[in-house]
Amino acid sequence: MTAIPMIEQRRIEAELVRDFYTVLCKSMPKGAAQEIIREAIASSAIRQGKTYADAVGHEPTLTDFASHSGAWDANNALDREVLHASPERLDYNITRCEYARMYRDMGLAEIGHLLSCNRDAAFCEGYSKNMELTRTQTIMEGAPHCDFRYRMNRS
Image (cartoon, rainbow, N blue to C red; front, side, top):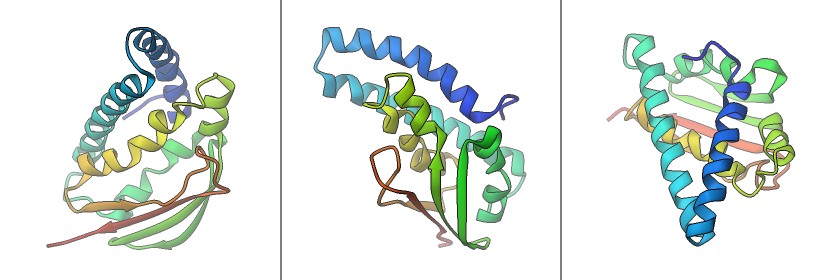
């Protein structure tokens, strides 16, 4: 897990990704460059999910997951409105996202969703084979809030 606030870690990563993205766009269509960024960031998020799951020491629940949300919220990065929280279901809205503002300020609004929002479902993949995220909108892509709906599907 990270020793620095997640928003600071994402800022550092974005500085490097910006340079890679610029170089990629010089040698291929923008869509292809974005797909490379999407795939690389998703791979990183899967690894991060596994790291968080390993730290729990048992098959993780959404209660375990919620207990780690402070890493993403640190430094006043998010305003979160929790609608429901249980081991099998976690619903919340993000009503303010400093990650979105940060990427805009860095000139990365075009790929901000790849750098942050793209990570969320991929993180689930690494965290638990039973974890599922449904989200229909994000602040990063212009919505008034992000709607996170997590489920643990025990089969």
